[in-house]
Amino acid sequence: MKDRPRQALPRRTLLLAAAMLASGCASRRPADSSSFWSGRLSLRVRSDPPQSFSASFELSGSADQGQLLLNSPLGTAVASARWNAAEAVLKSGQDARLFRSMDELLAQATGAALPLPALFDWLTGINTPVPGWLTDLSGLAEGRLVARRQTPVPAVELRIALDR
Image 1 (spheres, rainbow, N blue to C red):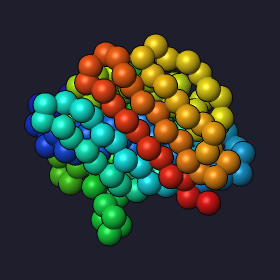
Image 2 (cartoon, rainbow, N blue to C red):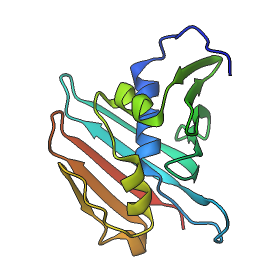
Image 3 (cartoon, rainbow, N blue to C red):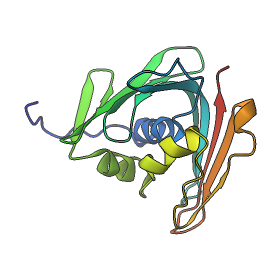
Image 4 (cartoon, rainbow, N blue to C red):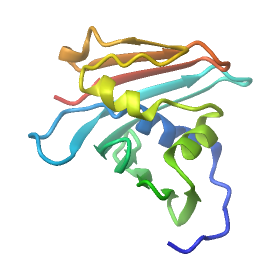
């Protein structure tokens, strides 16, 4: 992909993308070569000023390569992200932004790194520990996942409700 000039996407769009990627929540398709989740998520960042976002999403792939589609509560496409080992691309409307990695995209979107590999584990019921993060997978059988980052600042809370 040709490197386009970096266009500023609204911080809300970046936050939405991060939320969706962080969630990876959802109903699961039959096992195949990739994973698939869909559902709703809520992301709160206790920054100054505080930020929050909620949306529905579809997430497929893995931490190494995947795609995320974000939709408003009315079902309107808001943003999409695709990533692989070489790059990550965030699209919103006609705007596209290229990043070196999903880690970079997520850090830009939230102001802090999100543990994408652990998120994929959490969605499959593996409580992979990540410094600074507390996860509650006790509701996963009912389609609920909660992850909270307490350190470093700002604190982050991610709530996921999986489609059934």
